[in-house]
Length: 136
Image (cartoon, rainbow, N blue to C red; front, top):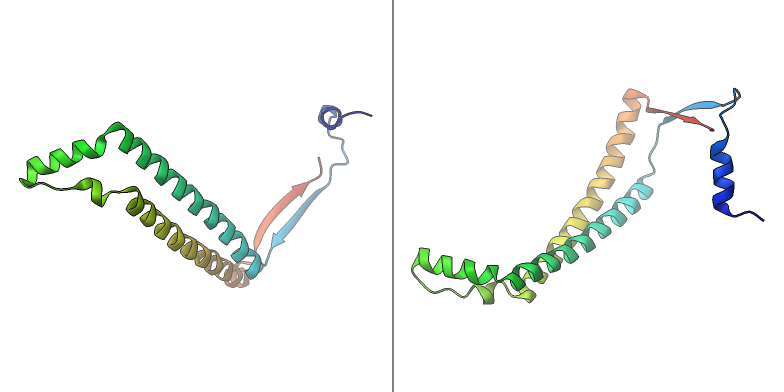
């Protein structure tokens, strides 16, 4: 038996024949719940990326001592001592990142639903999006 890679190599080696069929279809409806589910999954992935990126950026900035330098710069400019470490603790920063991720998830999910409704309404005017397919 041949492997999947060999089968794909054989397939791609063929030249397209003259009997290639092309189909033109119109996208005239987007299912509302499918759009909501897909936008929720995309928003969830972006929320996870937001939390992880915030943690990594905080770790790098804290490890390099940037917060200490900013604290001394603020003390020089304002003339008073401030405790930037207590304001920008890992708990506060990650709590803020989680709140932002949850809000983004809600907003992106709602926007996906709104876009699906707007597309379905605009199809009544424009007739839909023409999409072409072929079977190479």
